[in-house]
Amino acid sequence: MAEKKVSSEKKTVVTADVYDVLRRPIVSEKAVKLSEGNAVAFEIAARATKEDVVRAMQAIYNVKPTKVNIVVVKGKVKQFRGRSSGTQRTVKKAYVSLPADAKLDLETKM
Image 1 (tube, rainbow, N blue to C red):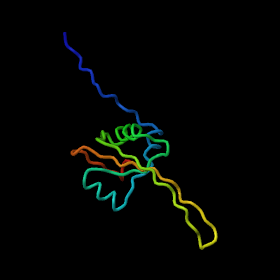
Image 2: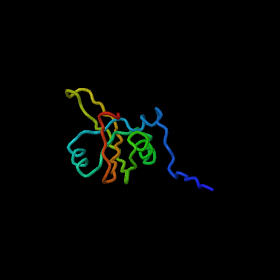
Image 3: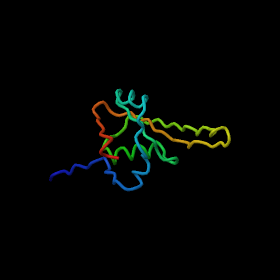
Image 4: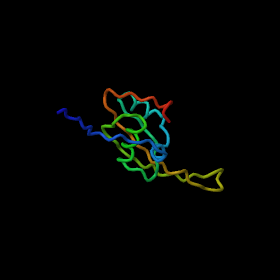
């Protein structure tokens, strides 16, 4: 009798919800330094969790992150020409560490 190999990994289906989690990659000086150390930065949805980010990375890029850190940057209060004031938007960021052999092509996948 031949034994069947059972795959322990579940295949994640790419849906619109997955693309809503990762809004856009962040391109800044800090993000470029992170990319040299095999990490990337993304702006994510306000309700997204670390598990959501891991699931989205696996579905979109076929890469399992080794670590995910999430930061919420509160919007600053700004004054416009000294008269009226407003607030910038609050942004939630995810810093994703990748395995050493992983390569991402951010331009084509988003």
